[in-house]
Image (cartoon, rainbow, N blue to C red):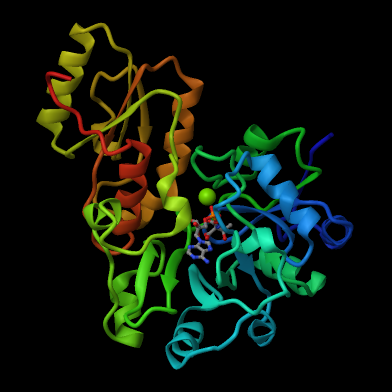
Length: 346
Ligand code: TXA
Ligand code: MG
């Protein structure tokens, strides 16, 4: 299959591109499109055969449910049993935007593989002009996970989707770089206390200002089964080919680690803020300015992906604070490293 990539920016007349995308979706095909977080790979969420194509193209395990994207708030009631007061408050405050809310799903409306047979469904309204135009022109719900091969970092540029899925999907709507760079916050509102299943662009502090107490489990609480978690969070994620090790963002410690790794014959890709660029790693990919978590989030997946174009056999990635979107950054970095930290004797 040939994969077309159509540029849809505001400088060209995009009518034909949207029509092509809508026709493909209506005909049971999948289409990649930008959102404000990462690129999604979409199919009509009521079409079981189409949704199965998403799992096939991504190589995604079938027990990992998909997020449903909607273009208007009104249609939500078609898919969910009940919209609670807290859900309404969150929708008013954060939709369109990077917040996925878990609701109890109405039976027999959405394709069963969207929910992976759970009784719940994650829904969000994305805040991106291309995604909204596509959804509103289509007038149907779109199931869309991130448009990467399963396990790889999510795509933040149209070209990333092409790298991963060329030949297995018919169309990519290319709207340039996505803004936020990490996936939406997944918030479960079906439990007594709301729980953040995946941290993202809408932070715990932002949510608590609107709905009161929200539980954000630590990495350990999620891993040892003390806290509810998204089915998808158990899989390897965001991983370049070479193993990733985390290291504190202290220049002297990173410099020493590079010396030690070089003595052992390793070739190292360093992922760190711009002020580490002078250190003697074989490859350096910037996270942007130190301590600017929003900038780091926007650069994170590009940096992780860039490692695969190098001959590095070790990736060192510096950590950041968990302030604001930093919680999402550290969640993704921990996953990409499989929890491994650099030590001198490794
Ligand atoms: O920003 C985003 O959310 C992007 C863009 C494309 O919208 N989408 C995205 O989808 O990240 P995906 O499939 O890569 O991640 C969805 C996450 C998975 O961890 C999945 O397990 C979880 O949401 N999830 C989906 N439905 C769920 C449900 N009913 N209950 C619990 N977790 C759910
Ligand atoms: Mg994903």
